[in-house]
Image: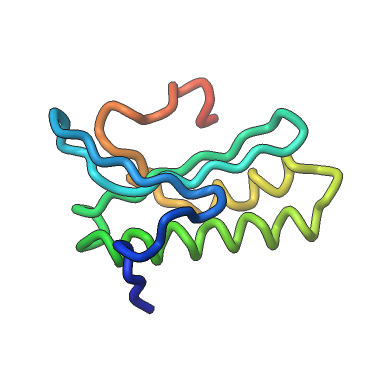
Length: 103
């Protein structure tokens, strides 16, 4: 599924990152429930382009929201299920969480 990213102005829980002075360009999915956060980055380079990385970000956001619907009072469990599905290479260089957070 391809998305026209020029037309889309605001997508809930998804932010576009384009920096002039760094090599990362892509999308970030961030959700927060009861002060528990889920964040994942989708690089244009890793996914093959802006539309492809947006499609991956939207799919992940939808999976996380579905998991939150299944576990409405347990965001830690919902986010843990979604983190277990993601590859270790989903973060751009320099934005990996500390090892203590990934255990």
